[in-house]
Length: 86
Image (cartoon, rainbow, N blue to C red; front, top):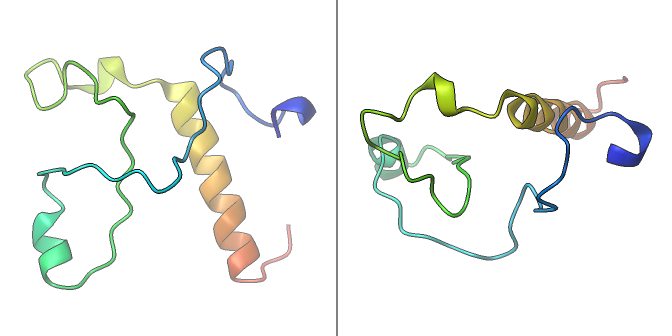
């Protein structure tokens, strides 16, 4: 997708958006939903940011280009999954 200029982020770090089979123990606000059987998609960068769960963990540290790319990828997946024409 990057070769077709469909993504906003630079891709300089050359890291995949989604890991393969790596699991980390995360204590977070989604736990009550998991305990009730609600499926959860937890999106967080790895390794965890140094500011994670601190007072500095706010919108100023969000990489908006990467966030927009993830939104684009998720929208494409959902549209494809639901057989919605582009």
